[in-house]
Length: 275
Image 1 (tube, rainbow, N blue to C red):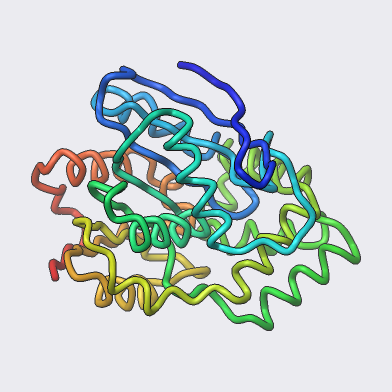
Image 2 (image 1 turned 180 degrees about the horizontal axis):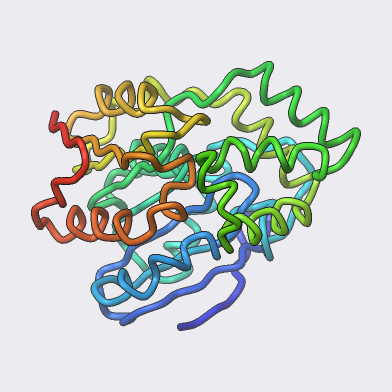
């Protein structure tokens, strides 16, 4: 394991971490809105057995710097490419969830030579509405992160998991309340205008679209729409999981991604559709 910060061309400092054999094929992980690279902790031990796992805090998140808003999905995507460059990775598998999934979609579509296989988890080509994201940003600016934390947790987790008192819920509650207002609102504004519907058809990497069956933020209908846009894709639903499916069903999420990346049969518990 190694940790270090890198600096992008526009002066943003990004905190990065690499786990696993440095000579193994690379897997780049991209976190969701309001989280940090620790959201992938449940999968790291298993995935670092067969990949060099590189992850980072997106701008405005975690230990990365928070430049003044607005942000764009293109900026987030160029940050991801800068992380690959800094770690001397010519091409990698990529896995992003929610906002991270949109960023992964941008990277796979605009820099196809850098991506071998792609996983787009609990995401969509267009997430939510412009009015909804701008309203959330305005609420956070006026009243702070505490004003929306309960709402976000209710959209991130299924009701049963949210009530369970699981450590993942407690940890995310703490992370959200401590999040940067500039980082969070800048990311909301990026999502307000992001529509990658046209770009998604340009993805050439073999792709896996994953969604929790109880995901309210990007429901299965959004995943089906994204799956239909990508030329070489399969779709898997994780029954009962909410928006952060990798936290609610960590073992199954990890197994499915590992099978896809290593070209093994995908576990058949889930609904699988191939393009």
